[in-house]
Length: 427
Ligand SMILES: [Mn+2]
Image (cartoon, rainbow, N blue to C red; front, top):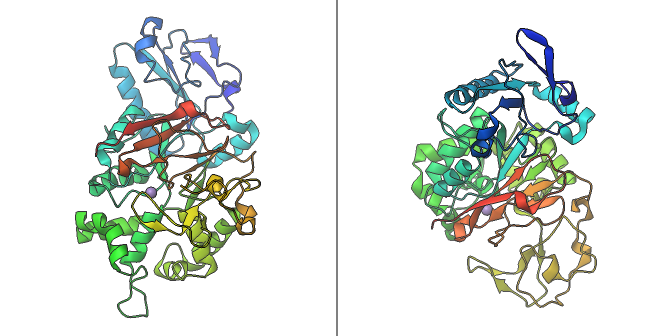
């Protein structure tokens, strides 16, 4: 239902109508209006700041609500929310209306442009830091009343890399997976989940060979996960990882762990169809270095990397000697040195040349494309900023004493730095 057509009526007084402001830009899977006594607005503003881009709309006291819900799960959400609202003495009533089905919503989006979107909180790489995740979800207004974290009006989106490194991998999975399964969150696969599947999968025909070999280096990268989880827990986690999409094209935003490249996505989509999902056969091809699928998955989940010029190396955060750098694939390299094109900035000489022949222009992200959100890049700042007007990374190194970062998206097509939220790492 287009928002400008939504009308609230009082029961028993059909002449009294309250029409919402014309195209008031409330993105949301459903729409809600709450009658709040004005004097209480200040104390409730945090809780209801999702209304109309941060503004409370105060209606005359409403005495009924209407509910139009086609999805049972969403209905449960709303009912729980209404119960909570009623419990609060300061709030007289809530009004909720206009809950289109997903298919209907897509149609509406094309008609209404950015007006009619779900609102998302995009959350960066967690890497076993459950305490920080709980704190961040709490700050974002998610609560655990139903046994999993949920927000009455918003959906969380995880950019992958739930496991490895941190001390609370089991707890992270116990938070994230139920949210995704219940529909209060979406999630994409990170390279650590992909590696975990490969590490755990035996080659179907070559005896005793895992698709990700159990070398000292590979075992070390995965050690926190396989030592913290029981065999059954690990198997269950791997089963779930196989169900994760490698990117999400949502209404109004794109989400991928490392690199958005449509030509690679076509390759991956074709392989998923051919092999019936992230099956063992899919993984065999995806781990076969040099195959098109390997190259596609490698770029999408691990980002593009350029080799350093002969004889030049540097050490990364883990102390590993690097002979290549991750790059800012989303923008043109024109006029840039390799130092400027690296992401994060690499400790290279300013005149380190960039081989433009390596640039895959198919990955350059159009300035008018929807905002794309990434993880993966281990950025470091106590004040996250966008990478471009429509590109943002939400990985700020919580597993290296950084911050766990989220971006609170309210329908804007230009990313604004004030919508980053974060909590500090506790370890
Ligand atoms: Mn990561």
